[in-house]
Structures are given as C-alpha cells and as structure tokens.
Length: 467
Image (cartoon, one colour):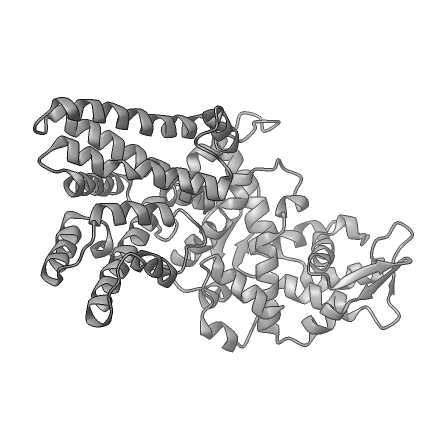
C-alpha cells in the first residue's frame, strides 16, 4: 500500500524528501481523524445509525482531533455531531472507504485486511498513503460547487507554488494570480467555468472562490500543508505554507537555460556529430522526440535511446557516442517542454517566455533549412506522421478516416482539429512552392516557420493536456 502510493507519486513527478521521514512532529488533521476512526472499530465492528452514518459519539471524537482551523469556526456554533454535518468526520470515512480500509456489513462498519496493513505502517508512511489518495479523490464532493476541472487539475501546481514561495500569509486570490502567471495555459480552462449564481464575479474570482474552498480548505489544510489565519469580515482569510510542506517536497529549481533548445546547443551537437562521424539527422530526431515526450508520465530515457539505437549497428565507443548525444537531446526536449508548459518553474515572465519560444522556432528553422527548398520540404514530410502516430496509438484516431477532423474535434476541440488540418495544408503548399523555386525566398521561409510553429503548438497542446 505504502510502496504503491510512493510509486504513484513518483509517476506524478512528486519527489518526497528523505528529511520528511525523520520529521519529529507530523501534524495533519486528516491523519489523526483516519487513525481515530479505524481504532474505534473493534473486532466485532462499529454499529452505524439506522441511516448508515457514524454514531454521534465517534463523530464528536473525530471532530475534536481532526477539525481544521477552517472547520473550527462552524463547530463553535453547533451543538450536535452528525457525520453528514461535520466535514472532518465525513472526510475521514470517505478516505477510509476509498482506500478500502473499511466495509459495511449488516449495519456494522468493519475493518478489512488492508486496514490492519495501514495501521501497521509508520505515521510517515501512513501520511504518504493519504497524500496520494487525496490527490485522486474528487474533492468537489465536499464543497457543492460546480465540477471545475481546472481547479482540480491545478492542485499539484498550486502545492508546488506554495512550496516554492516564501512563507508569507496571502489570500487565495493572490495565490490564484501567481498560479496564472506560472501556468498561463490555465486561462483557457478558467474561461470555461460556468457563471451560475456568483453575482457579479468574473471568471477569475469564481476560480478563486472554488479554489479557496476546494484546495485550501478541503485539501491542503486537512493534510497539514498550509497554515491559516482566520480574518474578520470583510477581510479575507490568508494561507501560508507549513513546515510539513517545506519538509515534504523539494523546491523546484529554475530550469537550466543551457538545456533549452537553441542554436548554441544545436551547433554543439552538430560539432559532435561531425567530429565523431555519426549518422544522425538531427532535425528528424529532435522532432521525433518532441512527439514521443507528449506522453505523461514521460517514457524512460533509456527506452527511447534504445529505440533510436535500433537503426545503428555499432558497438563499443561509437555506440557510447550515439547514446550520449541522444541523451543530451532528450534532456533538451524535456527541459524545453517544462519551460513552455510552465509546470516545473514558478514565476516566469511571459515576455521572457515569448522571446525564448521565438528563439526556439528560429533554431528549428535553422536546423531544417537547406539551400534547396525541395530538400527542406522533404525534411518536413515526416512530422505529420509523428503526430498521426501519437493520435492513433493514444487516442484511437485514424488519419485515413473520412471524419478524421470531426473525430479529432470530439476528442479534443475544434481549434486543435483545425491545427492538424492546417499542418497538412501548409505542407502541401510548401511542396508546390518548392517545385517552382531554385533557392529560398522570404515567403517560402515564412511558410516553413508557420509549419514548424503549428507542429509545436500541437505537441505542446498534447503534452499540456496529459499534464
């Protein structure tokens, strides 16, 4: 149970610090509530109410040890302890049911074998299990707001943002703005939120309202990841990262700019290819890797290198030279993805990102352009194939289907489907132009740039969706 949870977190690119397992004080309300509930069930079971809820005595006990700062303001004004009215008790039960630690039989709540396995874990191991399951549970079940997938999907990024920021108390609105600055792609999802009955609030205010309840009150506080300062009306509550969060996760360091795809990097790789007499089409391999790494979790570097090595029948030092170059290129593609999807770097400036993105496109143009336009087009032919293979293997979309664009729109959206169609149309036009030209012209070069830009938009969209 614990090892499976830890492996799943690693798949989500969440690395737990070793220091966490030596933390003396592990303060997490949900951990206390889950343990108390399990320990309240003896070998005969725990008798539920006629309606199937926890008895009020148990609910009161859980509330007393597991209520968060946010819950306490409501507890002060209530005198009854019903499971359906107390979040800490309800959440403890839902989590135990999701982990299959408990089951109901003839009005009795019984422990399962997994419960005994859970209780045998150390508190730190138990916490990892709870942390993992809470990232998968639909937290919206506890707040009654609209589905708002964009809020749920931003939970991991928000955790990392909290971890990377200084420990200052800020409102949920401030964190939402910081999140958008770090992950601008989220703006499109926020625009899809339903207005419903939120008065005159705009989409960002609605996102903040849901995020404060769903992420801060229902996820981060129960897990002990944040501390809360309760404000008096009309001031807003404020949150700051806890010592637990600092100890749990490593800070995400700024991406190494030297790894980003650039002319400097490409020229360095070209020098290696020339000196070591390697037979590598650098453009083909680079674009192939961009297609391969649309997948999340990313494929193992070793497996991708092995696939690339299948076309080289070499051994010894020469084999090592090929593998080393491929590994450098893979690191560059991964770093470039991280930079432009903004999931592993907090606080990037948008102008800076735009400049880096345009430089990357110029690098690709430099890499693919040859003195003869027709040869340049020949180098571009393989790119749509990379995309169509990904769509077929991962989404079941067949490029030869008569309704391919429509099917693509249903799986993704109309804009994405049109990007696919645009990619093919630009290539057809470039092929016709190349047959008439003996050397490159400004219009032809612009067409190549549009083609490469469309390709990169497609692969970035695919990876962002997976993330």
